Each structure stands twice: as structure tokens, then as C-alpha cells.
Length: 205
Image 1 (cartoon, rainbow, N blue to C red):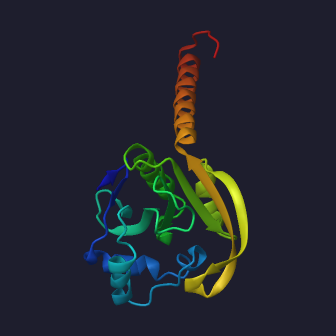
Image 2 (image 1 turned 90 degrees about the vertical axis):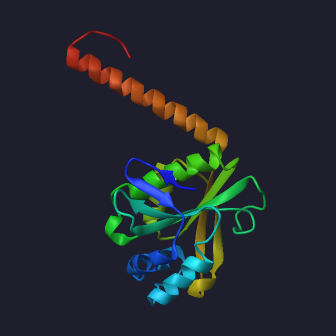
Image 3 (image 1 turned 180 degrees about the horizontal axis):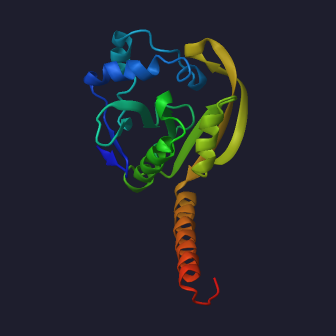
């Protein structure tokens, strides 16, 4: 499966992505805050591609027209997440190389994979979480309109050999459809306001 947005291509990981994965995943600002240590070699990154980034709904994030993998995004299905034990629910996971932070890339990628999850993968609910202190991930989830559900303290983070506080949110298909309709209606309203203000035509809105 290949997914596409205005700026991005989301595609399956390839072994040839090992060098670009290492370039971004070796940055200590990227992995530890998400719960995994920086990669130490291209060989380690290759092993991660083969054994971790191989899920049915795991995608490399690439920017058009470049095919370089700059991050990862995944719908973790039942059996690969501790957030749910239902086949029609999953967990959204993601990370992005530091040079691409602050450009709206992750929100753009997440909106598309959420659409795919609800419209094509048969999901009824998508869960997501972030560890305390990961404010960038928190802002992405708020921008996407996930609803906060609960906070769990002393959660094991095995790869980092420590415990953290985990904040968990979710989105149902119904909520996603409602937000989508309201966003579209709001854009139409704003376009009408702009048109009326530019033409000087009196009206109410």
C-alpha cells in the first residue's frame, strides 16, 4: 500500500532505507523521547527495518519528489499494541527526523493514515499516546483532535530501562467523520466571508 498527500508519499520500508534511517534515528533528540535509544550503526537500522518497521500498516514518510525516508508512521494492529485487544482498533505511532520538525509534516502524514485507517482498513477507533515531556507529540495529537482518555504512571519503557508517565487519547470513526464535516463547513464559511469582504457585497454569515 502506498498513501499520498500534497507533499508526502507514505510507502513500505525497504532495506535500502537503512542509511537514511540511521541518519535520522541516530539523533539523540529523536528516539529517547519516544521510548527507544538512538541507533548506533547502519546495520542496527537495517535490523530495525527487517524486524520492527515491518508491520502491515507501517510506512516510511518521504517528501516529494525525494524518496528518502525521513520518519515513520504506523497503525499498530491488534497483537502489536497494548492499547487495545480488538481487531477493529489500533494504535497510531510515529516519529520524524529533526530537520523536518515544525513544518506540519507529521500532522499531514497522520491525517492521511487516519483516513486510511477508518476508510480502508476497517478501524472503528484509533488510540495514541505520548510520554510526559514529549510536547511535540502532544501538540500533534491535539491538532489532530484526539480526545484525552487517561494518564498512566510508572509505565515500563523497556528499551530505555526506565518508567514514565503515559498520556493516552483516542479517536472514533464517528468523531473523525464529525470533525471532518465541521472542518469542511468552516472552510466554506471562511471562503464566503473572504469573498464577500473582497467584493463588498453585503451579507450575513
